[in-house]
Length: 141
Image (cartoon, rainbow, N blue to C red):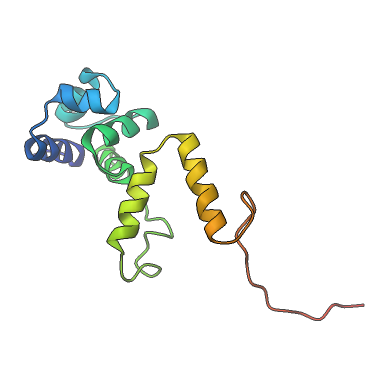
């Protein structure tokens, strides 16, 4: 039985008609790495972040999807982040998910530009922490 990472690689290869070489070229990682990840039943340790990023690009999948599949294959359970938790996102928005997946594929510099744009649109100074509303308390003398 295929593990989670093998399964997503196999599905993408079949669905898109890609080869290991094509995924490697698209992701900027060695073909042997793609082959190893696609054929190894049990990964001993998590692949390096750069490998997961390259595989994500090569498969045209969100980085989080690839990371979670790799973690599951290694026997690691990743807990959902606050943003992923159902209590905070009762109605997932596909447009938001697409934006997040797209931003993950940008370079570090491009992500900084996107962050500056978002901060500008939200009306706060770039790099400053998000505004937190506090209850007003009378000052003690």
